[in-house]
Image (tube, rainbow, N blue to C red; front, side, top):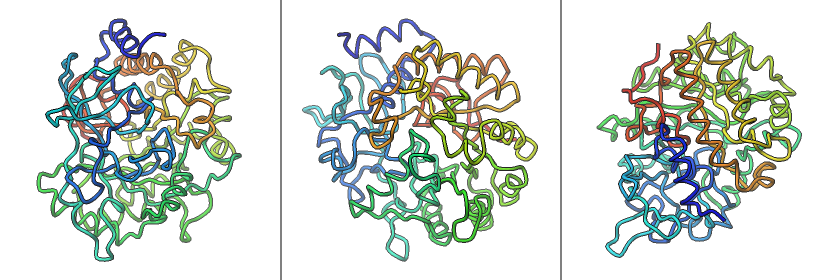
Length: 440
């Protein structure tokens, strides 16, 4: 059997124009990594910023299966540098997998490193505990619970609604564990606020603004589960939009405001814009028509794939094509039982979707699929998609962007290997170096 090192090095050789940093990053995101106890955090009482579980678990096991990593959280992210591959600075979101061939551990001199097949392949940096995490809200809640930051402090992630109204086997997206993640944190006795109070969010942001003196936090994302009826008497546009309205009134121009929501009718999208949102993420999840029906049954039932895509295109009239950035979950195209059987087929399908949107001026982005074990697709596909798929996707993504004359989307920080901070896929690492893209 080919070692993981041999597999990675073979792909680096076959795709030399894909940064080697992105090859390792995609492998860590798709398959997770293990942590020695010496590499875990001391939760909110230590010097390392702990994993916040900001919306999904992004783990390859449930909390009870993670051992000490469930009691002493791993870091939110790690940064890789150096080693025998001379890696440039690479920020990677942490996805815990105790059986991963990648392991973070301390050497005899106390320096953290990433080990693969028993060999140290990179130095590992961990995010320092930000000063704003050391201060509580007036009600005793932590800033990490209300307004965690990711992407090495660049993005404030505001999961305003911690569950999804697409509920049960006939409605939940088959790769999504948002509802289970809510349940497991409540079962473990962890604080995990279901609906975040607007005033709590403003108080947490006030603390961040006060102590983030370097202004590292540049954007916020408003998101949560889909709303098919109402929450607190509000539909989806008004529920999420009210947070943007309050933030923009209280902190005018301080952050780039983004919202991840369903593909809504144009009048609803206009309300987002009126509330002060600057970037709209109506995620299309997976391109293939059959797979969308199979893997996103609630979205197919309530909206439908064709209408979903029409609404994405319509939202250009409100936000401008540059500021409409739908996400897809890279890898579910190859998930059993209905996914493509070959990498060639999967890449062809996904590229068709990229061409559809990019030819209309819209630049999608993607999250690397983590097969969480409580989801139907995670149970069926514990190893996720082949690493080759992810590397070829990076190649196809950049080629399609070049074809249509597009550049890195706004609200994601700088692009380029050694510069990117977007941590849940390598699409920003694989693009040409650029400064922070500015929305239009």
